[in-house]
Length: 423
Ligand code: GDP
Ligand code: IMO
Ligand code: MG
Image (cartoon, rainbow, N blue to C red):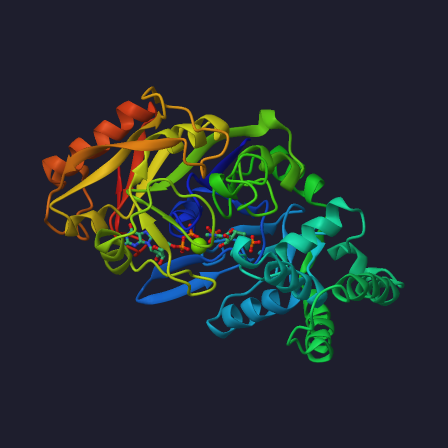
C-alpha cells in the first residue's frame, strides 16, 4: 500500500488537525514526519476541544496506530503533559502510539538558546514559538543531537550533560535569561522516565512492514509550505522541511510510496510570527477576519496576522508538494463579508504581471494585484452538502479550482469534526 500526505499550503494553522481527525478512520496509521511542539493542531468533537502538539491527530480514533517519525523533534516535558491530558480523558497508548528511535530530543537548554537567539535578533526576530525547535534541529544537522533511542543507552546521562555543557558555553555569549534551568532539568529527567513507557520503533522498518501488510498510512504535516526551511520565506521559517519531500526523510520511506497529497488552505490567509506576508491586511478588515475566524495561535495564543488568499503563493505550494486534492477550510468565516478579495498576481516595478513568487517576497519591488470576489452573506456553518452552498460560495471555489488546477474535494465550514462538505 501507499502513503497519503496531508499538509498546509500557507503559513500553518490551515486546519490540518481537524481534517486529519476526520480522515483518520480511513487509515490504519497516522504519522507525523517533521516539526515538534511548535505545532498546535486543534480537534473539536462531541463538544470537546483538544490541541495536539507532538501527538498525531489520529489519536482519538480507535483501531488506528499513531507514529511520531524520526523527522520530529520531541520535548519530553510537553510530550508527557500531552500524554497526561489524553490519559485523563481515557485515551490509551498501548499499541496505539509509537515513537521513532531516531527522532531528536529537545533539551531545556535548546529552549534557552531559542530565547537567547530571538532576543539577540531584536527587531529582526523570527517570532519563534520558543519551543527550542531551531536549536534542536541545529544540533541534529550539526551532529551533536540526542535521540529518543539514546535514552536507553547506559551513557545517556553523560551525553546529556556533555550537550548541556556545550549549550551553556554558547549561552555565555548572551545576556542572562530568566530561566529556571535546574527546575526544568528535573522536570525533563522525570519526563524522560515517562517517555520510556511509550513504544520506541525503528521507524523506517515499522513503516515498511505496515505498508507490506497492506496498511493505509496518512502522513500529517505540521506548519505550512511557506515555513519550509528551503522554500519558505527564509529566514522567517521553521527549521524543517514541511513539504511532501519531508515525508521521505521524516519517516524513512521512498518517494514511490507517496500517493495522494491533500493540500490544505484557508479560504483567506493567516500568519503568526514575523516575516513577509504580501496579502496581509493592516486595517479593520484584517481585524474583522481575526475576530470572525478566531485567529489566535493554538500554541502561543498570539494574534494571527490576517489577509486575503494569495493565488501565486498557493500555486507555488501546490507545485512544490504535488498536491492532488485541495481542501479549503474556514469558508464560514467569509460569510461576514459582503465582498472580499484574492491576490491574483504579483506586479513588478515595470508593470509586468507574474504568477511566480519573487526570490524575496519581502522586498518592495513588486505589489500584489487583487481581484474582487462577491460574498454570500449567509452563514455556512450548518451546510454539509455542496448543493446547498450559496452560488457565490460555489463560484468562488470553482474559480479557485480552475486557477489552481487541482480538484477541491473537501470544504470546511466550522471547527467541528462534521462541519465538512465532502465533494
Ligand atoms: P492546524 O495547526 O493546521 O491544525 O490548525 P490550528 O488548529 O492551529 O488552527 C485552526 C483553527 O481553526 C482551530 O481553532 C480550528 O478549530 C479552527 N477551524 C478549523 N476548520 C475550521 C473551519 O472550517 N471554520 C472555522 N470557523 N474554524 C475552523
Ligand atoms: P501548525 O502545525 C503557525 C511559526 C512561528 C514562527 C516560525 C518559526 O500549528 O500549523 P519555530 O518555533 O518553528 O522556530 O517558529 O514559524 N510557526 C508556526 N506558525 N503554525 C505552526 O504550526 C507553526 N509552527 C511554527 O510563529 O514565525
Ligand atoms: Mg496550528
